[in-house]
Amino acid sequence: IGGGRSNKTFKPKKNIPEGTHQYDLMKHAAVTLGSGNLRQAVMLPEGEDLNEWVAVNTVDFFNQINMLYGTITEFCIEETCPVMSAGPKYEYHWADGQTVKKPIKCSAPKYIDYLMSWVQDQLDDENLFPSKIGVPFPKNFLSIAKTILKRLFRVYAHIYHQHFKEVVQLSEEAHLNTSFKHFIYFVQEFNLIERRELAPLQELIDKLTSKDR
Image 1: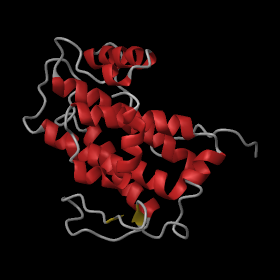
Image 2: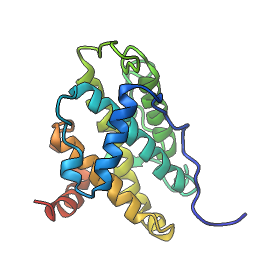
Image 3: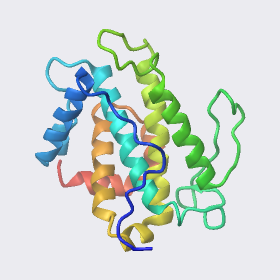
Image 4: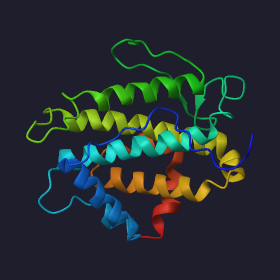
């Protein structure tokens, strides 16, 4: 089969319905990102609702990580990744608080499958992520978004620590770095992930963000 970049995503892409305000916000985000100033691109646009801005960007990060992980799934298998780790010091066990209450140790591909399916369920739930105009966000929306983003970070951490070699072989490192930098600026702007959760990639975060201080 011909080589080249795979366009498959790990899970189906989550689309924001055209004609909605969130769709306009997403387009605004794409345009500001194109300007190259990531610090500015993540800021809440004037007059916009924070929940809506976080929702639109969370969907975007899910889609980005989905695609990035989709390019390396053939390397992330039970044999090579028997545990979900981010380097020798960090290991993650899966629990979603609903169907899996007690954290279970599982392989990275299984963990990421659980994680992305769980995120997808949250994004598809109209009570949590309302896409219709005028439907309010739940009062605890930001804490839901924080949990989603904290878990999505773990996929970046696993890719960087365990699969960076393959990412380089596929010439995807610029894509990965830009996506991760955007993600970090976003969570820093709104304090969405605690610093200790970012520890597995702290050195990289310092390196990627130091140029823009």
